[in-house]
Length: 100
Image: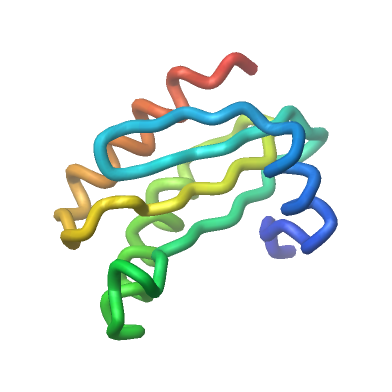
């Protein structure tokens, strides 16, 4: 079973969710009954699909550790591709600061 968000859930998340920002990642979250997520690597900052997919792979890999019942969207906002360890630290920081 996939844990991705539907279009309706994404709209609700961005309308009613709470925002958290770190140096390279913006996150919006909302309490839910199960864990659902969305990741984004903007085409505006990364023209090559290879780069966008790499960023999204990093974000998904760090989200696999989460088991909180939330819906969350992670948006990579940096213009540079950072290492997996830095992305991992920032996602863990976001997950730790969630008020769930």
